[in-house]
Length: 149
Image (cartoon, rainbow, N blue to C red):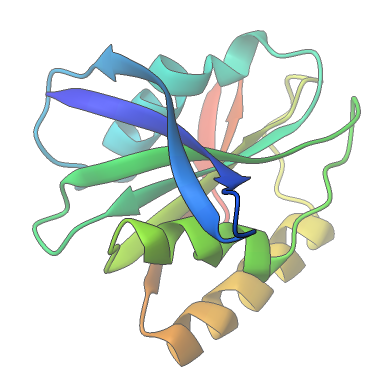
């Protein structure tokens, strides 16, 4: 199965459109566990090798198939700004029924910070209003991953 990494751009009418950045092969058809989500984040974004925090989103269809992968924001060595608007706009463009968000900790520490928990809460609440479920929030480091849910 190919996973397409998209970005968003404005067309000539200033409407948001998807742009196919790249695609990667992924051996499984669905993302149905924190382990498979962490594997997708690593396969598509190479999170454990990043020197900066990278906040990403995987958009899933009703059968938990990957509809697209998106880089939401790129931060500094220890923080990344995230707003629900930037998470859900591309998810809606691909018709996602649920999402999984993820980011890395370049320090290698897998601890879940209070900021991680607050980001998870805000995105979950926004998703409930939009009808797009937040399935998980994965934090990746060079020593593995943890769930912030």
